[in-house]
Length: 497
Image (cartoon, rainbow, N blue to C red; front, side, top):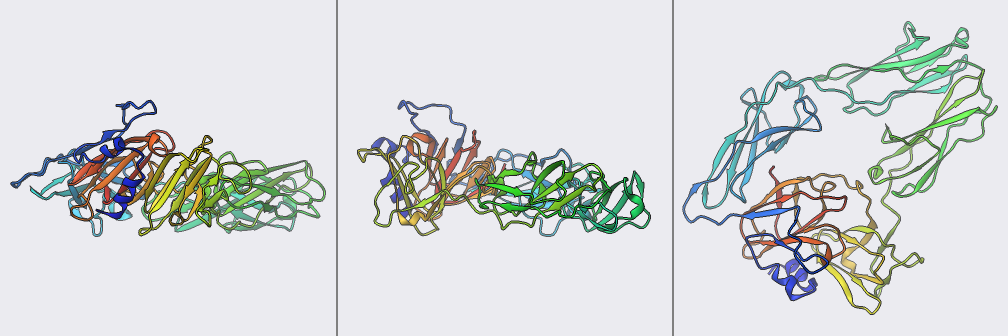
């Protein structure tokens, strides 16, 4: 038996739980907190019986669906949805443009390029499963591929708008990045002749007037985009002191950063702020303080400060970028002598929240939630990525060294949206896209593959359903809530629909 399956079996709390792992053909509903099957699992699984003779696979015509948009555009993402096939079917893909194969386009997702503008796309799926005759099906044609679209926030003008000073354009990150950018400076709504660079020197005769800047983005396969003008800056008197802001605070998810504006002379009447992550404006982050979220993980943070004082030039200053945002500082690991660790806010306690760890492919990570008398409330074991929710009712927790460091998990912190799953525990929508997944069966012949659906990560009470796979199988990952989970051991899964 696979060592992960042996360890998982030891970690289960009762013979009833073990019974759930011996039915290979279906997913079994797990008992709810009251001991009764809830019967309302948001996830389902089907396993087809292997045929002795070769018969054609059950199949359907695949379809092409754009993601995040109703349009087929350059730079967009298209998905090949397989539809209904014999459970456990695996697929290979080939995309076509006007019936001509696209070199290298052999995945279930495809992003059209400039070469496909005006062409209709199709995708061919070749389905196979042991014991069945392979089947090829081709989708209907898509709408003609349109030119792509740029997305970018408004630019900002950095510097102090005073005669003789140099103003500079701060261009937020565009998606996608353009191949070329044309800058157009304006004075009181009229273009300034020859002002087409990223900088502009303020002339004395512009005192009291308003300056703005626009940009025109271009890239092959994309419609040129004229970015609306930046906020105007008014030319006026010069500040004797106008420092760049400095970001203070720990650059970790969950920590709060503060923009220190420094000492200005004279003192402006007002200050306004805008925070950026990886060059993109953070919606609603317009005060001097900003708390880092999971979506900021591994990004660099900056902030701009804009001032106003009657008679003085508008000033906009930008901070230096921080280092990349690190994972949460709320973390813990196994006790050096293997003892349980108390749950609580004390310096050596474990805070009640959800954690993530990476045990590696070889190690078997074990964790336990315990009562005050030492009774185990729940436990889990496995390799790869692990998730663990510590509850306020827990007195102590235990984990082994193979788990490594447990780090507080924030929704969106690891927004990978992978289409494949192997040994590990995953958050649906963060780590895995919802949809139908297929496996060819156990990675090692004769040893089972297990899978489990969770409504949380606090052990057996959070299990929605589970099953064992002994042959090619398909399952559906739906998931609801921000911490719906999926775990598997002993096989690999691929998104098909």
